[in-house]
Image (tube, rainbow, N blue to C red; front, side):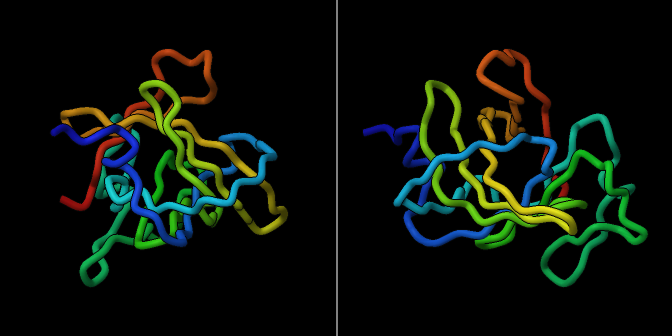
Length: 146
């Protein structure tokens, strides 16, 4: 029996996540909370070198100092996702066609807000982030901690 898309990306429990505020606010309340197990790790848009943005710290990764606040990068560690600019908590992860929609509570140094992020995992291990439902190509991210 195969594994469904939502089974592959969700493990029910409380999660924390950080993602760039560039993703745009969305207001919607959900009761379910989930952890995107397949998204754990340090991710970077594929056109950039990992060693230019990240440094190894213990068993994980951290942003290099000084932090490039414009780097298209994020780190998912346990229940948190950090970007150079923001920290978020995942409220839910739901399938939407061939994508997953993460609903997040995010905060940066000047604001807080609700954010929806559309992503899909590829068989080659990359992750594609879409700006909205009309975005057909998205941005490709690769893991930097493998």
